Length: 146
Image (tube, rainbow, N blue to C red; front, side, top):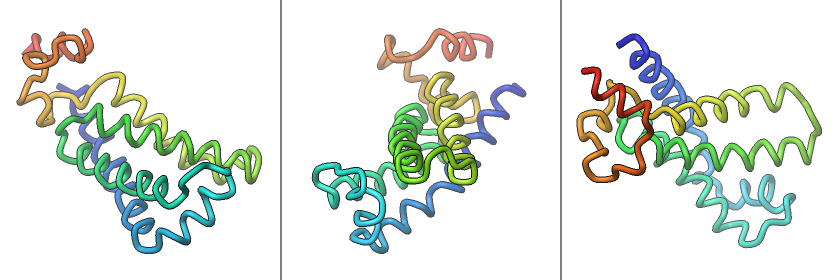
């Protein structure tokens, strides 16, 4: 039970703190593309900027609600991985730029690997019925303990 409370707090803290970054990207998508995507020489910078914004918004909402927590965390994990790459390529190993990114990255990785816990819509739905090979043994054990 206490483990699930920890996952709830982790999901809420990541989702609530990260969601505004996605909305800020949408507010001025061209500026974000020029500042963060084009310096990496990635193709389709405007499209990828929208992908980053919506992965942060949708991923955050999925974490906040606990619905498809792993999918939301995976979207955030991918976006933050690119953000870490950008920070390293443009500023080197600057701890002040990397610390928040690494905290988001580690939290998202934790949720991808462990699931959302018992205080989530995932637990109520019990995805194991629909996707038996997608759920991990740990989350199945948690669900069987109850």
